[in-house]
Structures are given as C-alpha cells and as structure tokens.
Image (cartoon, rainbow, N blue to C red; front, side):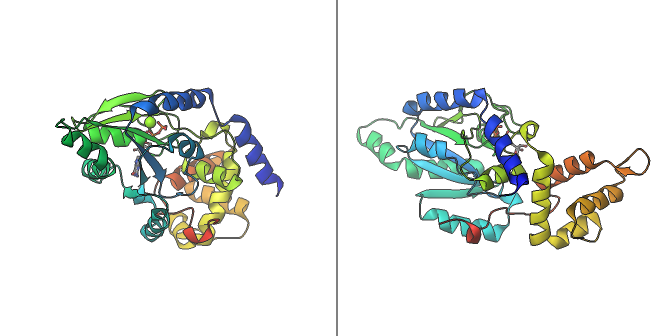
Length: 295
Ligand SMILES: Nc1nc2c(ncn2[C@@H]2O[C@H](COP(=O)(O)OP(=O)(O)OP(=O)(O)O)[C@@H](O)[C@H]2O)c(=O)[nH]1
Ligand SMILES: [Mg+2]
C-alpha cells in the first residue's frame, strides 16, 4: 500500500462516524419494532460500496426492498448486470431515477408484494388492511428524503446535494396504504476495505470537510482516463497526458482558473472537477463493475 492510500484510510477511519450517526443507529434499532418492512437505497453507480453492513445487521428479520437509485447517472448496461447479480440474494430489487420515475407506483406495488402474506391475513380476519409502515434507509446522500417527498407529493423532509442533510428520524404519511420513516444516512464505524471508502467519497456520501479531496480527485481522474478518456477530452478540450498533476493544470488553464497572474489555482480546479464528477458532466459513469468485484 502506498502513502497516498494510507493517508486516505487513516483520515476516513478517524472522523467518519459522527455523533448523529450513532444516535441514528440507535433510533433505527428502536423504531424497527414498529415497521413492517425496510426500503434500502443503494447508489447504482456504486452498488457494492453503498451496501451498508450496519443495515444488514440491524434489519435481518424484516422483509427488505432494495432500490438502486440515481440510475440516470450510472451506465445502463452495468446497472442491468448488477440487478442480475443482486437478484440471487434478494427477493425484491428495483432501480429508480428518483427525480423522474413513477416512484409511487413502483414502491406501492413492490411493498404490496413483499407484505402480501400479512395483508391477506388481515383480510381473512375481516380487517381493513392497515397502512404498511416502511423504514427508508441507506448511506448518506443516496436519495432517501427525495424519495419520501416524491411519495408524499410535498416537501415533507429536507433534501440536499450533500451528505448528512437528514439528522433525525421522521414519519411521513404517503396515503392510507403507506407510511414511511425517513432516517439519517448512516455509515459504519470502520471501513474494512479502503476501496469502499474511496467509492463513497467519490460519489459524495462522505462529508468533504473530513476528506483529502485532492487524493479523491486523483483517483477519480485515473479511473475516468482509463474508462472514459474520450469524455474527458470532449469536456476539457485538452490532450490526456500521463502526468496527472500536469493534466489538472491544463484543465485549470483551459478554464482560466489562474491566481497571481500565471499560476493555476489548483484548489479551484480540484473542487470544480469533483463537482463535475458527482454531477453528470462526464456522462453516465459506473464506478464499480460487477466483473471487478470480489466474490
Ligand atoms: N440524478 C439524480 N439525483 C438524485 C436521485 N435521487 C436523489 N437525487 C439527488 O441526490 C441528492 C441527495 O438527496 P437526499 O434525498 O437529500 O438524500 P438522503 O439520502 O436523504 O441524504 P441524507 O439525509 O444526507 O442521508 C439531492 O440533490 C437529490 O436531488 C436520482 O435518482 N437521480
Ligand atoms: Mg435525508
């Protein structure tokens, strides 16, 4: 392992399980007794790294719907391969662009399938089926609150394009059929695998304030150069030279990010590059391919 990776690992391990996540974990544990099922969101760009072992551990006993979100930002072919892979493990898994797709229809029909036995039992007893209560969980910034707002047709919870927006658990009623519990995005206290930390950092699930952002940017640049070189060329209009420091400098020159006359403002270059990486400036990018994942 080189020094660069050591640096990233130590910084992530020290700071990345803030107090509100410990509280959230306890809150989720408490509320689990009250919910019928769990809706777990994972990021379609990083389906392996955004699987949260803490959620696996907490929610084992509950029926679980897995949703790969942000499919508009991931490569469709890769997403299909991931679905095939994950179908071996889970009963119900769907993909959603939460901003555009018909989320109501998708969630309601999936929930009814997962809850069928319970609903049938209530009907047999002559009862009107009670609203399904679902806990929505997943890593920070994956789209939990956005999903709930779309289901409720209103801004019932706060959303934002950064991790750690939701701080407390909150019930939101969608209809007489479905009630949802929004939860703060949680990570887990220690990354066993440094690749996972890197993936979560690249896609914006970890607060930048605790990250060595330039290391993350070098990693992202390397991956994009290897996998989507033509998109980088098209976006920046520069030749892709081997030396990544010099390449970042050439991005800065192209964008006119200069300080003190003729020096490139590297901080601005890196910050802008990471913003572009996390939006769709380089097209649809899947950061984890099924073919490269451990068994
Ligand atoms: N492109 C795209 N953006 C999405 C999608 N789902 C959510 N977003 C965006 O992702 C950002 C984070 O959404 P939130 O709903 O706040 O995420 P969260 O999971 O509640 O995050 P925390 O509360 O911080 O854990 C927002 O800017 C959303 O607009 C999606 O399917 N596609
Ligand atoms: Mg939220």
